Amino acid sequence: MARIALLYGGRSGEHDVSRASAAFVLKNLHPSHEPVLIGIDASGTWFLQVIPAENLTALPVHKDESQQVHVVPGVGLTAANGASLHIDAVLPILHGSYGEDGAVQGLLESARIPYAGSGILGSAVGMDKDISKRLWARAGLPVVPWRTFRKENGINEKEAMSLFTELGNTVFVKPSNAGSSVGVNRATNPKELVEALHHAWKFDRKVLVEQAIEGRELECSVLETPQGLQAFPPGEIIPANSHSFYDYEAKYLDPNGAHLAVPAALDADMAQTLPLLAQRAFRCVEAAGFSRVDFLVDDQNHSIYINEINTLPGMTAISLFPLMAEAGGVPATEMIEHLITGAINESAYREERNYTTGL
Ligand SMILES: Nc1ncnc2c1ncn2[C@@H]1O[C@H](COP(=O)(O)OP(=O)(O)O)[C@@H](O)[C@H]1O
Ligand SMILES: [Mg+2]
Image (cartoon, rainbow, N blue to C red; front, top):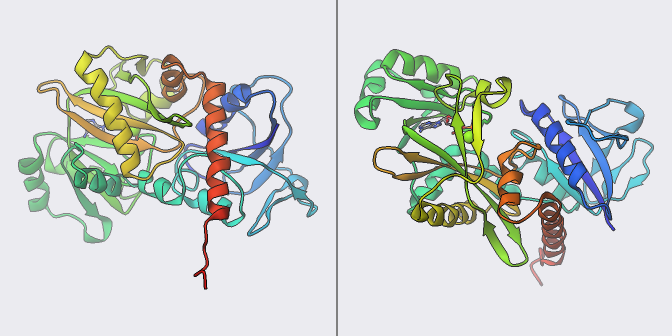
């Protein structure tokens, strides 16, 4: 039996998704563990939460100052009264900025607390679409052609025109560090492109302009287990209800915005290739524990592209990550056990590793 802290909520736009993911993880945590709930409010403050008596679809974040949790470097977690709060491992069930980008991973490492999933480097790289694509491209993995534009340099009309010659008639514009399709738009002419860039620059000073791929969106769950890295049969997202792509509305606001197919209907070749590519994409960005690797597949020529990696994928009851793992033979409770084991092993490695000069 171990004391397992679920860290959820947080400062990102995905605060509410995180609360739903945490409810799913709590429900599926092996009963031999003692859960400790830590809710992070929208300003980033941590509060201990009471374990709800019933199953909820999203865990609440109550802001009771007497329950504030402090992270103490070199020591661990302490309660508001200064008493130490012993935790065997933290499951960061956070999505987006501060949770998925290495920030909270660095904080936990400084406090010497074991935590699940990717470390500082893998999280930071996985969060930045430009950096992850640079690494994949360098490793010979297939990515959609793209260009990066920084806010401070702006864009002029000539450059905007030339992008369509370079990338095709339709392009996608997206912030390098964001998620949930926030700030993502299609553009089919220079005016739309400039507007889309200015919109995306509100969310990140670095923005990608990519060739648009008309085709399928397939995703693959990757999990580290004692037997090695496992990648499960992929699932598919089929945007519906007039959403031309998997935009924010289709993801979160329209209950019929997309249809999820688990497993996806794939020919034998694709069924074999995607999991292998997902594993290579995972290793290439130094991810750990688990991730969801997302693909775009061109309808015309069936070319496969790695679109992005999510190092803290959605874990709600209707999220693809747990559905694909379960369909692939690893139910949620077992999947979470692997994450906990990974957290404890990785922390043991960090503690043993010789940080001194050895002199
Ligand atoms: N190059 C592209 N071609 C076609 N559709 C794309 C492309 N890039 C993004 N999209 C669409 O936009 C959605 C969000 O973009 P994505 O790169 O997945 O960012 P996010 O991190 O916000 O999920 C995708 O799920 C897909 O529907
Ligand atoms: Mg995506």
